[in-house]
Amino acid sequence: MTRGRPPGMRVLLTHPVDSRARMRLAERTNLTRWPGPYPIPADDLARELFTQDGLLCLLGDPISSAVLDQSPQLRVVANLAVGYDNIDLVAASRLGIVVTNTPDVLTEATAELTWAILLALVRGVVPARQALLDGQWRYWSPTGFLGRGLGGKTLGVVGLGRIGQAVAARAAAFGMSVVVLGSRGQGPYPRLEREAFLATADVVSLHVPLTTDTRRMVDESFLARMKPGAFLVNTARGGLVDEDALLAALNTGRLAGAALDVFDREPVDGQHPLAAHPRVLATPHIGSATVETRAAMAERAVDNLLMALTGQRPRDLVNAAAWPGRCRYTPVK
Ligand code: NAP
Ligand code: GLV
Image (tube, rainbow, N blue to C red; front, side):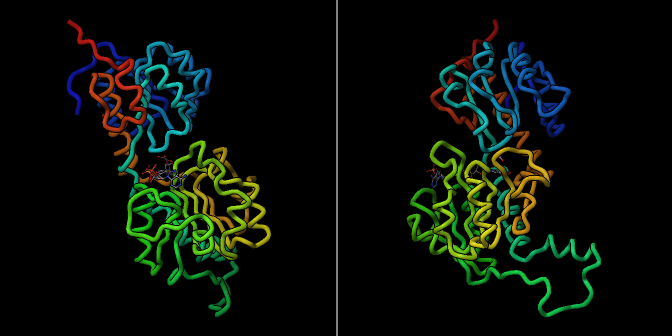
């Protein structure tokens, strides 16, 4: 990708990433690797960023307007994620700081995880395994460990972007038809407005980004209109869901279950009422967590960072309004 070392460019890496990508970054910049504890505390982040030109950060690093305002040299924030709701984009654009993300390379992994937790949820794989480990498997019973089938059912996709499309494309393999909420995104599926969508879908799967428009879109009214006995899957962002309303819908049995890879405030543990709920299968935000995908994400983030720091428009520029902003490149004579 980018050749040469941007003269004197200082970059902060808030967490270790794939070693090949990290070495490439270290060869071409003056790299500071935050040594821990992780995640980097907000005060340390603000202090470290004061002298940095670039930042490679995680989705759990809040890049607030206060942090950006205190970073006079910062030109580019490269997020190691496709979602960038952890970054104050308005502040970054106002300051001319370029923001990038890592789309595409994690699409398949996240779609696979969506299906993995949906299948495990509807078939009760986790409680069945626990029963075996607890010595509760005494004989093959025609009424034991019963789950639900997916064949002939309808998958409702909310957000037919890259991941939503990859999830929808796999539905036929399980004998499911697909409907989509609203008209946005690409794909040959019926488009329904909210009422009809929720009355049709046996499984609702969320794939929209977290924005001011989508925050808490799955609220009491949304859940009340889902089919009785439907399932919810969320591998997008926890903030899309009103967690109290979801808990209530699970407690009444209105919803048969939920598979959740993401939560409103992460991390959560076994004390979290949703994570611990018997109708919930919870995972710790592992949508993109494969060795291959995390390496590809690191390469993509490093590409974006080096491109911006050398004055090339980064491939995954999120805030076009900020380009070139502070990234205007003045070659050293
Ligand atoms: P994407 O390609 O941008 O897809 C998002 C789709 O949602 C777009 O088609 C967008 O339409 C649509 N959309 C936005 N607001 C909507 C609304 N109010 N109603 C209906 N559709 C709406 O993004 P992606 O790569 O698929 O990623 C989606 C999200 O998944 C990310 O933002 C991230 O939060 C999450 N994610 C989670 C994990 C994990 O580890 N669990 C991994 C990867 C991604 P327009 O294009 O018209 O705006
Ligand atoms: C993960 O959640 C991502 O947005 O990449």
